[in-house]
Image 1 (cartoon, rainbow, N blue to C red):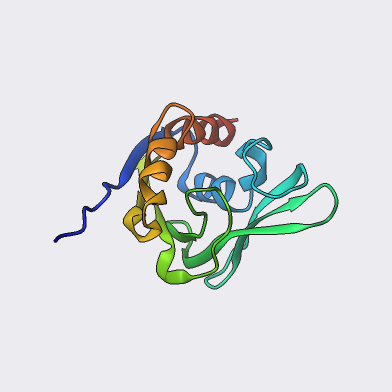
Image 2 (image 1 turned 180 degrees about the horizontal axis):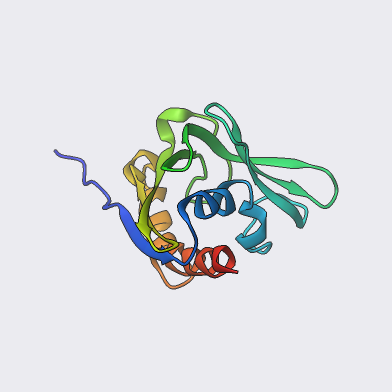
Amino acid sequence: MTTQTIPAVRVSVTVNAPIEKAFRVFTEGFNTWWPAEHHIGDADMKEAVIEGRAGGRWYERGVDGSECDWGSVLTYDPPQRIVLSWHLNGEWRYDPDPSRASTVDVRFTDLGGGQTRVDFEHRDLDRHGPGGADIHKAVSGDGGWSGLLNRYAETAAS
């Protein structure tokens, strides 16, 4: 019996910002474009954080000071690429086991003229087991990565 592989979610957006700014807004400015209602912690989210280094954390901080991990920074190569591990399972809870984490790979390409193409891929969703299909459905739908990256592109352009 073969295991069905869940397809990767791929989204590309053109950002009206130079590559350095596009990368900086995606990473250091993550909280400026990530919607506060997209959180998994028990408390309301105060901020979403991507630490700017390989081995760094990707997490949320609640209004009560609590922290809730989402994953980690696997590759940090400004301003061309960031790769994150996604440790949220099908119930939108943190799973610390790296063998059950999917991968978010974001590449930035300078198009010239103050524009940057951002190619986003969320792959390895089958690592989440049966919950991977639920995650794929959520992140590939209207409220998923496409909408979030459009929000990011608007923020980076301002």
